[in-house]
Amino acid sequence: MSEPREHLLRRRGPTSQLSRRRFLQTSAGTAIALPSLSAILAACGKPGEDNVGSGGNGEAYPLARPDNPVTLPLHDEIPAIEDGLDIEKGATLKIYNWADYMWKKVINDFCEEFNVDYEWTTFNNMSEAIQKMSSGQVADVFFPTPDQISKIAYGKLLQPLNHSYIPNLAANMWPVYQNPFYDQEWRYTVPYSTYTTGIAYRRDVISDDEAEEQGYNLIWNPKYKGKVGIYDDAREAFGMAMLRAGVTDVNTTDEAVIAAAREDVTELVDLVNVRLTINGVYAKLPDGVYHVHEAWSGDIIGAQWYLNDLDTPGTTDVLGYWFPPDNDGLVNNDCLSIPANAEHPVLAHAFLNFILDEKHAFDNFTWNGYQPPLTSMDTDKLIQAELGGYAPNTGPGTVPPSVPRAVVTESMFDKGYFLLELHPEDELKWQTAWEEFQAGA
Image 1: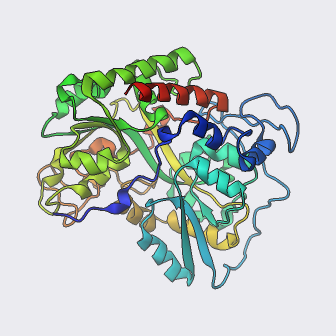
Image 2: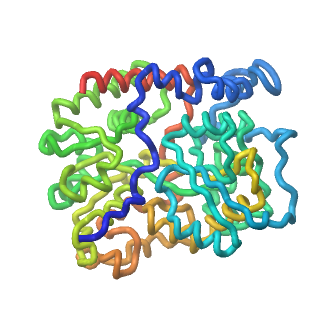
Image 3: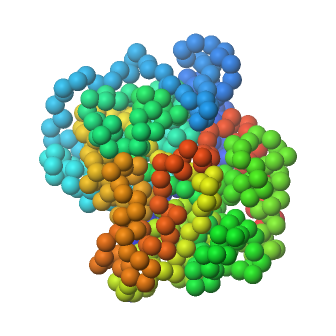
């Protein structure tokens, strides 16, 4: 039996475990509950509203959307570092990241090359991370999500990047990340990983033809009752239900649409005895606990490392992954940034550039299953072996040939839908609907 790859424990804590009261205390958008977060919001104002002031208190900021790209502000008191500075000697790089989301070997390789040490601190979700950073958490490198970039940039928690230290972005990353809609001119972020949200299934139970025919309806198929899971995440679960119903505005604020998604997901309780999980795809589907599960592409790639007899060719053929054939499903990416209070900003820039190096980015991908947006990555060669012949520990390729749609391409980001930042009051609509679903589950 292959040794479980514990690094694949998901880096995203389940937001749905928050009670409504706890949500009001921890949401990064609710300024009244936590002094540290209200300090952010005092600088940020409310997203998407007309400006109500300038500079500090009450300044509004826009909601970034693909059709409404945002150029984030620069702050005089937080300048970018100058060109040509030497890396801080004998430094300890402080990394603030999701748990188990980067291969420590890659970090150790960086430390060996630059003769430095590192310190690893984790957070469970973005709300926790922003709260701690606003309260003085010191870090040199931070891993934010695109839906939070505006908030933390307007809140003056990040420092602008000096592009001269990060040539690997222009050299190696997809063109879309030279000017992402959520951070035009990549003033504060570089890309870390990309992923899609589709449906994972066991191919010894469900054929590829059935998966292609049913798509999202696999989750609602009573034939698989007791073997169905969805992510314990309001935005992901309701977003899937909306796409199934033909609703493409997965950032809707319409309470009727949100309520309809809640009703569709609630239907799963009696119909298939649905289970809410975070690790169901990579840890449980390989063991047959689930036959079908809502899935991040990185999770189904990582599921191979939880299978028995992994070195035997063909073992991974049991894994399947459906994503809409026209690519109009959920897509997203995670980022790397440098906090405003970084003690070693030159070293931090060197680390970002190191992670965007082709070799190091690919090495990390083979460890956590989440694909970096490398222009040099031949997506066909990620799936070199044929069905019945793939053995990850002995053969070529990184992605099992049974899950070709788990490979992320830049074209998916042209048609896909992003789960993005909402007004705090609108985020609460989603959360309230999720709690109503949970109460009846």
